[in-house]
Length: 82
Image (cartoon, one colour):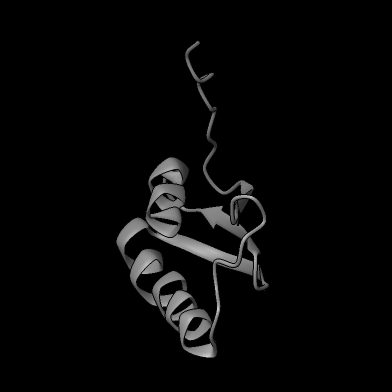
């Protein structure tokens, strides 16, 4: 079954989340969490022209609210979860 097409709008807020499987830790050390914050805050923001609005980072999952300046949310999601 194909994944349904996601509609994207300029300036719209989007919720991106990633969870360990099965709820396993994705961030084990402070260095892991700092690395994630650096990548999400700097590199992805500049590369995909998005505005970060909120972030919740825990040991086994994270939530990120972004606002798109360009229609590229799927590229941002892929970058953050790879």
